[in-house]
Image (cartoon, rainbow, N blue to C red):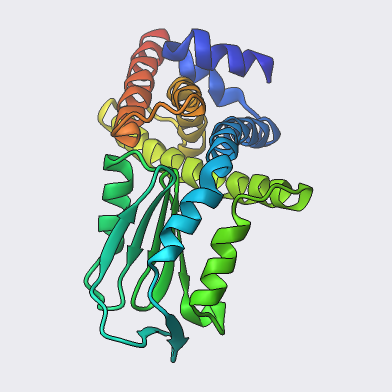
Amino acid sequence: MKEYLKLGFTAPNELYKAMKMTRKQLFYYFALLTLVITISMASLLMTVMGNLKEDGQEITEKLPSFQITDDKLMVEEKTESYVHQTNSFLFFFDPNDSIQEEEIDTNVERLNTPIGIGLMDDQFYLNIVGQSLPVSYAQLGTFNDSDFKDIMADMGRFSPVVLFFTFVVTYIASGFSLLYEWLIIALFANVMKTFARIAIPFGKIARMALIALSVPTVIFALFETFGLFIPFTFEITLGFSLLFVYRSLKNYKKKHKN
């Protein structure tokens, strides 16, 4: 395991050495990178949670009365959709189905807001530090403005259960995010291997792709730990990881020339 950690951070142009990784080592390496991302996100969330209660009260003060009926957001009086921003939240209230999920994600990233919340026409939408979590109203059951106010009031309260739940949810979300990036890089790397006319099974290419994620993943995790959000992190991660894979494939081809 140590040799692959060293490989990922000190010799990213020799990623072909990662082809020897066992499945167990691969799993542990993935779990370790996921933990790095989780610690970064969790530390940021703990900082943010200190201001959540005050910001939550600000949002709920102007929240119209509503209830969920037939899995739809219903208001007592005709209400225009609106957006409310605080230091911790970017809140979207949209009973008119005029706001899309992409708009929430884009504005959360553009405004560097840690948490985006959308009470939308047919779902409750949550974006936490770039990780999206849509929940249909059918899953929530009975839900109204009083329930939402209670949730916002409880957000700033710390307890062992809250901390554990936050860590577990963050770890799962981080794992899915890392898995997505890993798959994209592995697929692109496989195409690069084909063009380079190198006969390497996809499983070994995937091992190289995971190690290639080491440097950009840790660097961006450190930035986010200190509250520094870099735009286009996925694109930058993809670019550097594929560059490492490309150079490694060239080195591999040179060493295995007949």
